[in-house]
Length: 420
Image (cartoon, rainbow, N blue to C red):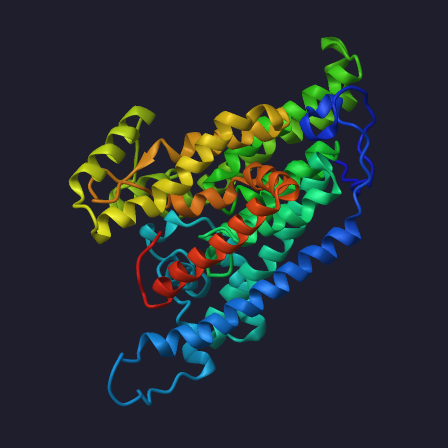
């Protein structure tokens, strides 16, 4: 498979504007890579600085009583840093230090803890929590750049900044800074879609291959890549016989094989290590009671959980924490999918399908991290960016309201509260 560096111009075509076109009818677009990368880096630096300041104030304030003498508890930088050592981060730290020493740990894919292990070996294993944050935040920078480039490719340069802002301000976007694997998958998925849009098949396949070692969501990248490839073949007027030519197959086979190959390699390791090639799926059910359910059962569980949770209580609010982002994503997808290129629509509906077929029936919250997984809905942020560029009031609402909710949820997370 030959990899070629991405070009800076998409293929010419006539017809509708690029903002509402499919891959086969996209107008020529010059993507200012350097300018968008600088904009993304600026947003990334500003939000990272804000998260540092927020942590500095939030941790001491959470230990201070409303009345009485001030608390003299010391919060040195390492203590503040360790407040990010929560939930899934603890699993990733354990895997990065000790490998997959229990079957339960196989519920977490290997790419992210592997990178954390590499960074921790450089800066010292005693700083492994810092290594998790370093990997996550550098991946977030790459995700900002990838989404900015994709937004410029699909909707024009003016949309790029707003799409990045929509992502940065999303209420659960602080998970992109925490020791979680989401930012790494988001970056790889964004560049996979971007390279597929620009016919860089080798790079698209490589991103999908690597992403499949990070999250199970790699499977939703297959159809978007194949759609883009098929659209280009139709655009070039190739028939079935021409598609079977060696040169054309050399483009198609990596797109078909990238994700299955990655999952097969992971399954072979699990079989050799634990005698169970499907250990990642099985432990989700055995240890965390995550089940695959039909969408109608997912809807039933959501309705039942809302009905059983008393109003104005934590369980009811906790349910809405996951339900609201998923509902917003579904509504946007149903109302505006015609404004997406078909490949991005396929990606979005693939993500929704994975979300509404996974549940925790035994818990009062039947969700499986959906509020966090909506962060991976790249086309939603592209469309929000387009709307925000045209409507200043919406920009203020998304950015102001998003960051306000993000601060609220992050404060709870730093105190050890369970969100996703």
